[in-house]
Image (cartoon, rainbow over all chains, first blue to last red; front, side, top):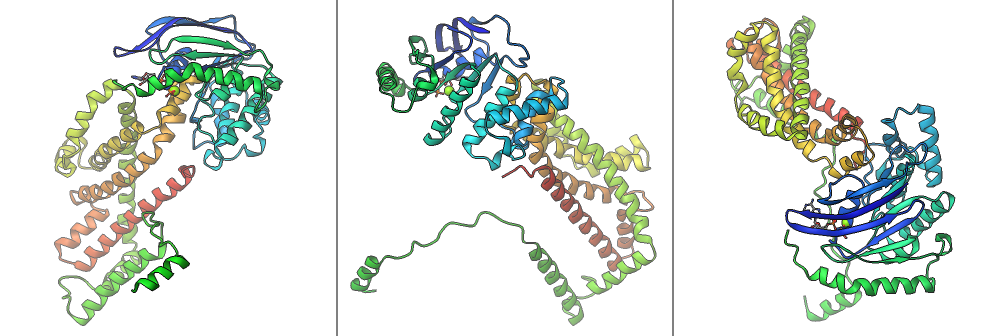
Length: 255
Length: 272
Ligand SMILES: Nc1ncnc2c1ncn2[C@@H]1O[C@H](COP(=O)(O)OP(=O)(O)OP(=O)(O)O)[C@@H](O)[C@H]1O
Ligand SMILES: [Mg+2]
């Protein structure tokens, strides 16, 4: 299933947050969205996921979601959004409970996604007993459990320290290698963008518009930490963004 | 201190003075018992020595003897039975209705705008003053007592519940919506558990109010019940029995609070 954005524009009480965003997200690819703070990345993701109505334009799903998909557009949140009163197993089962799946089958799905995120030993643990990286893996497991057509990830690694972030990026890459998924990945971190993105959309400062789309053809598994080509791309992206970021930083938030 | 010693002190290094800690009360069970025992011992000693006259305060040992009589004659259970039933029925009605209303207020703008002023208007009414009205509406029997207790627990429960619902983490609700959970699932699995800490701490207050109202209701037209027992003792100036009744009430309060503590530990074990 592909996603197409057609001329998305959005304003909050006369403050224009983004303008004329048109974009195609093809199935099986990871599209990263980068841009200065406040340029409307999170808002755009909420619009794509149907949690917010754009003031202009529309979001289209093209084609049908894959077989067995329970929630075509599925979020992974920056702050994990785990229910603290449910165990790891319970947090994953939460999103299966409304679909009338027999218990045995649900347990199978949960066991599978926990194995894929290397959490099998922690099924009974409560979120407060987990480290940040593990919490985010639970959130990823929960998202995988509904067999999403498109993963919507809003700075999924931003709440983590840099080592954990590296490890989790590796995990995401191996998840992708095992079974390619479609994702829209919002981040502040250009390193994440060049490691995980097949294409990288650079937004301007508010009102957010597409400044450039950078394509990276190298397969994800072959992108390593400190790769000179990736570093060059990262530097190129940073040069694109530097002026915007500085200007955005100096603007008063008059909302 | 001379300059020389100060310098040598600084050179050798001093441990940094500890200034953290505190502000984190932890339960110390025995302290409560010690406080109670000390207060009772003081009263006993005062009445025996004579600087507390028996008219001011009955001797604790006499109260204990009265209490023992109460148990041996079975009178205690004759009074406790109806009281506990009234407390249970009345507060169950009030708390259930209060949680329901509080959740509706917490979730729907129209209900909120319509009911919050009503609740604010009802809250400060001394419910005891309405007892005659309840007697007319629900009869002199159990009905009016249930109604009084239910009404008294209703308003604080509503206020605690909608405050707790307001405090439920919105990102968790967004998460539920983003996974396409049904409205009822979001309420049952996210809003309600998330509001539970606030609801339970509201219940501590509601149930203490329920005990106060129980006694008030029983003072007006009840043959059996702790309130009736205290009223009778009071009108005869039988201080031992009066105090025995008061002790029962206090024990009831402690028991209710402990019961909520147990529920909290069961339901809120997930809290850090
Ligand atoms: N619910 C809202 N009401 C009013 N203004 C909002 C709302 N949500 C976001 N905004 C404004 O819209 C702009 C874009 O916000 P958004 O959160 O989408 O930016 P972002 O690119 O995700 O920023 P960051 O990089 O800091 O996460 C900001 O200026 C913000 O103040
Ligand atoms: Mg954001």
